[in-house]
Length: 159
Image (cartoon, rainbow, N blue to C red; front, top):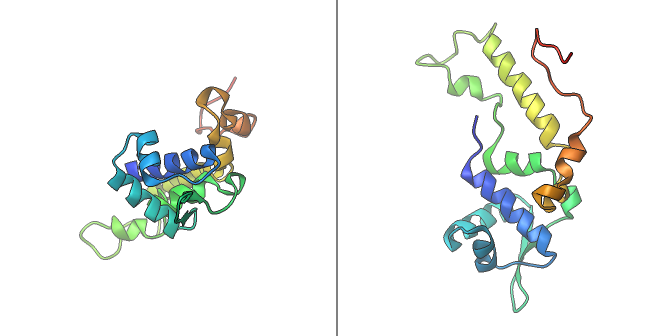
């Protein structure tokens, strides 16, 4: 399972804007993230279209968050930029040469993807952009998720 570069850079651009506490220009974000201005502009266009940032013109213009960092769930950002790992269209996309998957009625693989998507959602929907703003050493993400029920595979034990 992989997250795309677009999702990674989208999240990183939002974190830079949140850290700055002021509007950032495309060249500033490009420099901070070590990506081309073209790639930063494309990423910010998607983030603006999806309602995560707003753009302002002028001397002190640039991109700023559309709402507070504590109101932006990481799951919403990743879903808006790249979609879900598993969605209802998955089975239609992977039906093979047939119009309908041969396992449409009883599919143990589909149930696995649904469980994985649920686990991913349960983590990403609890983590906000505000949790991500701190440096890795001081991040609230681990503390935020600590103590939550961790999924366990059948037949394994924590003892």
